[in-house]
Image (cartoon, rainbow, N blue to C red):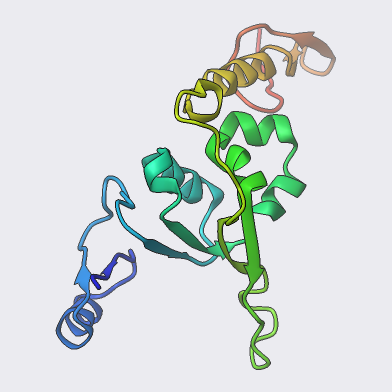
Length: 186
């Protein structure tokens, strides 16, 4: 069995030890993609949701996605806590895959009760049947919906314009791409 690992905090000594004593293939830079062409355990504790999305996108094919066991934050927790429209727009692979996953929580340590508290082992349920490859809605990776949603949000953000030094006039400025409120001098 071949084990390939990468962690941005590995020191040269860490990499040397893992390579020489454990026989691991240690990558010195983050791989451009993470192809799961055979059975793959992706150990991703406390990774940002965007890393899960990137990993899933790299493997968003019927023959690859079934090879993966994820060990990391329970993706169902994200689906429960992020509005579905946003999850589907920004993290479409995660949103589409969650209904097909079975999740088994990793038991907590008695010594470090709060560490790794939402870590689960996740894989496609054995009884789950993923949509066929010609189901373009499921297998597409388009972020056009995300782009549309972001543009719409940018167009409706209320803005403030400073008019005479003290009086503020609430204005909607269409098409500006900044988030939040902004003061402009006339």
